[in-house]
Length: 150
Image (cartoon, rainbow, N blue to C red; front, side, top):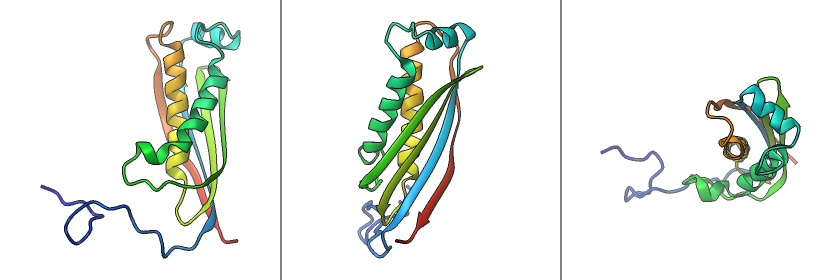
């Protein structure tokens, strides 16, 4: 049985203690893509999907997801997020989603940025699954993370 790397003296799992780290302005950006059939892209561009405006709903879902990250990822710190931007852009082969998340805290926001992208892409998938059986979610990645002192 493997032992968790973040455990107390009794071997119980704990969140990493970030108390000693100074609060800083932190920003993380992430992106991901969902490949779609041409007919699906056309339906999205004409706002003809039965479930509604795919891009707007995906963006809102991504924002909501970033705010819930610590409820979804075990041992992830709840953070006081100060800004969340999620953009879903229709492209030739599908939808590109980008996110930017900001906070002032003693730990970073990369998990929130990645969660925003993942849930936004899953929302596109959910809204298009009735018309596209060949969708592929791909290339989800952290683009950048920064921290700057006050």
